[in-house]
Length: 211
Image (tube, rainbow, N blue to C red; front, side, top):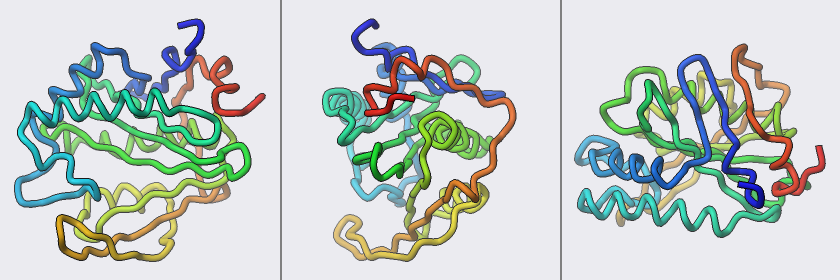
């Protein structure tokens, strides 16, 4: 798309493609949300969007993406890539920032359809957006967080070299829960061979960057 070059932005790894979603991709992502993202009785998200009927989860997934599209600016942006594995959309990997040209800090978040978990995809998709952040956009730091009772997310974060960055108490469905924060510095980030960023150059002005 000439006036919105983000539509051509993608990242590839040995197994995955992370791409700016089309409407068809979002429809398939909605299917993953409807099928389920986590076990019953456990809530890994600060905003409990999965605590809804399947069709409502699917619709909310699309509406959330539309809000990110409309709100994108150099002052504050979020890209929620769809993650494609073996020809299927399996989940989403987000990268976001506020005042990135000045702060050079990004945050990440993600989810995978439940039937695609346990294959190492979570680590691979986070590795991909960290490559975009540090190699493509020139980030200096990346932050993330997870509830302390979410061992899968914590394991991915620790595997990628983040350092613990304090804790906070959050309200999860009316109960206090401890969140562990993490920070990854550029000096602690390691390039992973085989990751490629596609069609970034034309997108840089949208991030407030020149090169």
